[in-house]
Length: 172
Image 1 (cartoon, rainbow, N blue to C red):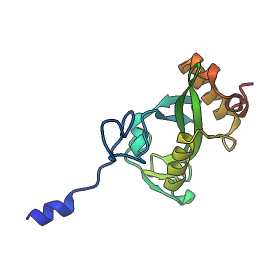
Image 2 (image 1 turned 120 degrees about the vertical axis):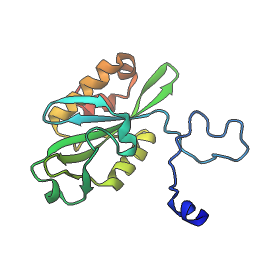
Image 3 (image 1 turned 135 degrees about the vertical axis):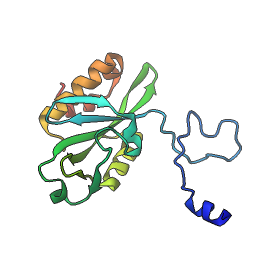
């Protein structure tokens, strides 16, 4: 019985806040802090953007109840979305949008099927955390939606962000 219970236990995903090494000698060294990463979902057809914390674990409202595959044909006729990983960091003059990376996603609610490449989503989150800006593959209207969303969400962070971000999103 005890062995059965152990085999049913699943590995959890731990989000480590603040300094992972604070107060510990050795524990958490080399761990990534996800505290300053936020997932933003852009609905391409609606032209809207929102922070969806559930997307951190592929549990956003958009993703819920959908079986995802890497075959575009499975979700044919579905709605296009962008999952954008936004990382905030601090400069001497204050916080700014440091990493912004976009991942493609298609969801067909009727079929309950979706298209996304999980490895791409994970890699893009990593790139965002490493302060990369990767948005050149996004469609122009979605770039404008993202630029407006980030600027309105926090004008100070937007103003302190690198010129590359505003240029890549056609905001300048």
